[in-house]
Length: 462
Image 1: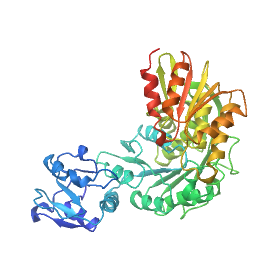
Image 2: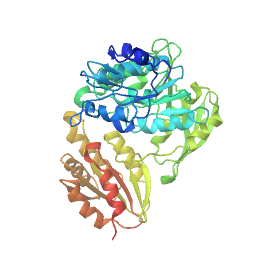
Image 3: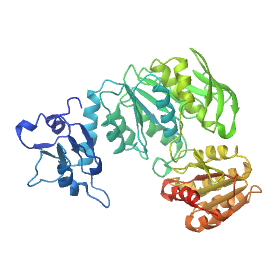
Image 4: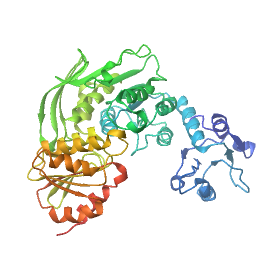
């Protein structure tokens, strides 16, 4: 890792180097916070968690071959150098920021209320047609995950695509300070994290902190169908590129737009994407029309980095889903839409739109959504109402707030509705109800742990 000597790392995080002078110039090969991921020559950064203190694993990682460790306390009889710091978490951020400053590759930063991960996957798939890409793994998009992602960048990488997720003011500023993205992508301004950010205007303000470290030669790619994002003008001399589906744009003019949309149900979507450089006739292999927006965002990023229209088309058409994100599973003759990584009102509607394309019976298995603020009950009711209006055959839901979801479905259509206090109670009735050829959507906020439902469906034998 370029210039990542122990001496430079200590300076970067305002730490005190403890060790021999000859080892000051040792250059680390990687940096991790998980002791299980430590390899020969790595730096181990111990984080204090609610249940586990990473400092307890320092002797173990030394035996595994760590080049050095950070520590918030003085160590005795340490066989390798260590860097004494006030806070390991802050040191992690400082080290990642220092490392990012050594890099010359472009970094694409993605934020938004909904669709960050699917947009990241689409952008990475497009850029992979020309470059060696590093992308955020899993949900590593916060003040711990982002620096760890940056520290995974190696000499062979030619571009990095990183997710940037927040829930409060100031967080995006700190993330942007580390990542300093060359291309900023914003997917939408929804109604997530209202507990702290209060309103959509508050969300827009918080997410716009991604521009705090914008360079004059940077690029901004924004959803021009979003009423809040469409108000953004020139930022530090950078004119945003806007994208939208024809007929949905909030601005008089957008730079990239989609037309001729053909919904192929669970086989995906076909569309024509128009750009100043020409048109792309693309088959998006993932169901749901919201993926057209992901494809347009990826088109904007691809053009900014010099890809041809053919390369962009190839990247769109080979994109794959990841576990828990509109992942289609063939289980015992059923199609299960595994979208249980997380949920909010906007993503719930998008997933229900995917479910509508199913053949035979359509069953929604939904749970509580978190961090919705004072209107949380009404927002759950409206999701239930949308289920009924979408002519979904059955709704199974569990959780306290989902009682409002069940009420919304019962009062607005002919959907067969079941509500249970816990998912364990719900599972028994759900499993005995399922049959071959059903299409089943499983979705809830992360804390509901709905992946257990997908596993139960996989393992159930009638």
